Image (cartoon, rainbow, N blue to C red):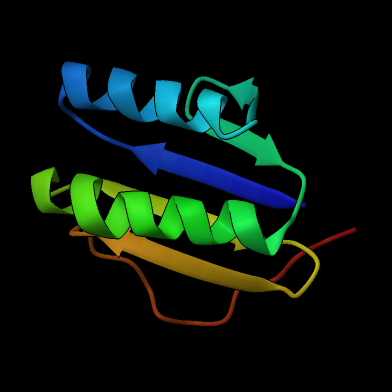
Length: 91
């Protein structure tokens, strides 16, 4: 499973990003959290869209986290300050 969490301050960009996640097959768990079936194709598509379009438009506090729960990996995009320590997952 993939979990995508985001914090985007611009209303228009945030709405567009949420619609992109729905089009990619995301299921909304909370306002800014989506769940996906973990597949390499979905992950690759999300990474390309974020890197080529969204991350260029992010403001100073905007960010996107992609958590791969199967491999305990996290991918971070954006400008917000975060700790670069290991993440702990609970099952």
